Length: 636
Image (cartoon, rainbow, N blue to C red; front, side, top):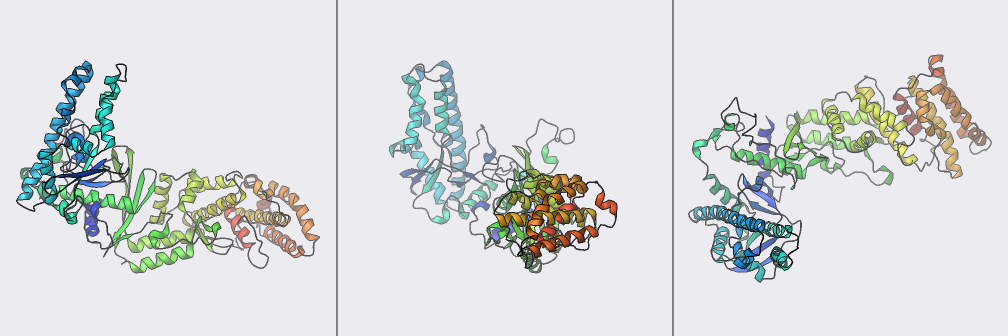
């Protein structure tokens, strides 16, 4: 199935899902607005009061296919709208003497606004009146009939002023403000009118049943049933999604990702460019989506984007599956609540990790819960320009393969931490180390590796390797060790997937790889010096950590320098009865690791180390903290 078909099907699941309590966002031909005032009336059309709406309060109101995308053109919503559409008697607030006091430019602007407002009000009232006439013969919509009665006998602005709406009175004063001062800013006139006309009005019928409120399904059905009677059946076209010959969509919604989103996923307004000219006479000959299916696609995608999305910058990614109900399966989010898992935060030092055994347990449960043939849908959208939204990724994968890919990712990535628990870094943490910020290109490439069980991009592995070699890559020692731990995970996964080399999550005492062995040696030297620093209460970076980058470039020469630097620590520990056992074991371990180099040249060569060096360093360092000799290292 195409993404259009899947989203259309998803809409039906959303409507039938009993777990979704608030479904008004699924109403066809509704748009979200932030009104300025609510006008209260009764079913007879009598004015009962008004109230100002707090900022950032949102309402859902009916709209046409084209009205949400309007700019300065005349295109009214059918029920609630700006004052420039609703206040048909606005012009009476300016007497002839007022017009004579205006400059010629201002007078022309006022005449233009007056004429424009009449057209706007006529368009609004024409749509409302048509809906009311249809409703009288069909569903007897009490709400809209009350609004119609009110508009025929009341003046909106007068009623708002009469109940003490200070903001509208201020706007009226601002319009005439410049008359008191001939040198006043000429823009105040235009700004005052524009500010007033942009105020949005919402109606409330106080004695109307709640099931006929503005955002009720009865109201939505009433509006859509009427609106579909306006379609010209002679213009019917075959829908590329449903295959049914029906009325095609002419306008396409915005506000897909969020309320301020101006980007459209589908559009057909290029009648002057070369989108279809030269091959077709008009755009309808290319491909058509029915008006109903278009609404289903955008409403379901909008719901997914606002409820289950994973976001990086302007790119939104959603994961879902359709069964008895919609299941959310986000493998990118740092919030495992989406998988039904509460992250273990009992230790404040563990907040940057996922513990793989718990993650895999949840994934394995999901694998058993969802039928293996059920499809998992993955969709990612992004806007290259403010007005255009594109589908960056669309994947359909059966649930068995999906969860097996996630479990495989956990297996390939996990290493042991100092508490002998399996550790997996968050993708956001990896992105921060590699790119210094959440990066959508990083997520796209990693997601491809996860789902296809394919190789990890070499440049990502090398970038994190070189990043952690810098001793100033983090603000403190704790951050450096955390970066090394995350880098070890990615390097391990790279070796398994790209080089087909099998590395366990814990220390491999039989591995004779040159880089791995040098990493182990450096970890032992770091452990010896750190042991002394902890006992003496010093909190500074060890020589091994300061020389990390130099060691990776010239390991043989640097190792000699590090050996010399830890001689005083060895002598100090050897002289004390309580620590002689500790240092003896470390010296034996250094000798054992040195004996594992298969060639003499491997130990004496100045050839740079491979990234496996970081994996050996981390795994040996963790192993040294296990057992009876475990050190209480506050940096880990």
